[in-house]
Structure formats: C-alpha cells, structure tokens
Length: 197
Image (cartoon, rainbow, N blue to C red; front, top):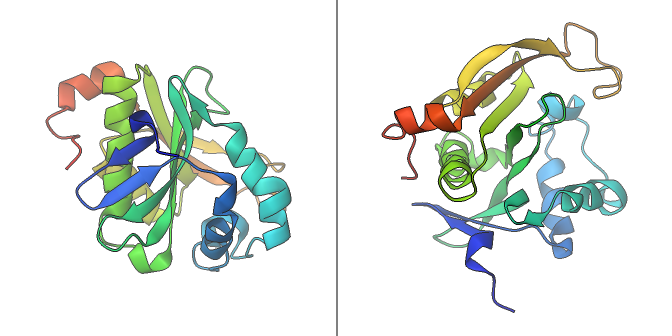
C-alpha cells in the first residue's frame, strides 16, 4: 500500500514517515541505549514487552491525519537506516499548543539531523497544517536538546518542574525543565531563518 503524501516529510538528508505497529523493534533498538535514555529514564532501557504493551500503543494513540499529528520514524535518504523519531502532538501542560519532540540514535548525534527533522515539522505545521503555536520541553541540563530547539527557531519561554508522576524517583532539582515555543506569527517573521534545508 502506498503512503499518502501528507504522511511523508522529506528533507535534504532524511525521510520522515508515519508510525505503524511494525515499528516496535526499531523503538526497542532506540530505547536500549542507556545514553539515549539518560534524560528520559536515568539510562534505564525500555523492555521490549513494555514497548509492545504500553509505549507503542500510546504513541499510536496520537496519530491523526487531518491535520497531521503523531510520531514520525526517520530514515536516512542515503541507505535508509533508521535514525530515530520525531513527534508533533497536543501539549500536555499548555492547552492549545502542539508539542515537538525527537529521539535519535546515538550514532546520529551531532550531525544536525535533529534540527533538520524538527525544522521540517515546524514548516509543515505552520505552512500546511495551520497550527497556531508549537512548543518543546526538555530537562534544564539537556543542553544538546536545548541547542536543537534554539537552532530550529524556537524561543526560550521559561522554567518549570515536571511532576513526580511524570518522572517518578527523580528529585525536584532533577525534574526542572525548560520550555521553548514559537507561534505562527513569529514563524512568519523569521521564516527566512527557519526553513527546511
């Protein structure tokens, strides 16, 4: 079955497609690296059984086609290797905003791929899908993720704390996060800087 054009985003180096139930092994491979999981679960890998019973069903629950939202596995155009995923889903804390997110395999860090995929979602979300506001959150100490947000054009909005339910076993200091955001109007003003390359 061929994919609908609105379910695929292509940049200079990567192709983002919609998530499907057959992606469980790819998600498990990604979540098995303690370094990938350092700012998510204190480096505890996600068991495959949990991927199947909890993680993948939750990720698929956000999938919508009109306007698109959900998770997009990403593959290199040259070779087709799976590099990680990107998401665009309703923001849990700030109503009316869509949350951007990403998780890449360690061997693809530091190449600008997270920024490239994030820019692709930003461009589609504002130009094609009509979303009014996008935001992204990460732990205050996750400097690599913060750089991605900044390079993609999002603007720092403030600090907050994730709840104990969201990060069980983490201290209050460890749960401190930062929020970045970008509105459709702001995107139009800086669209020369935030483009899909």
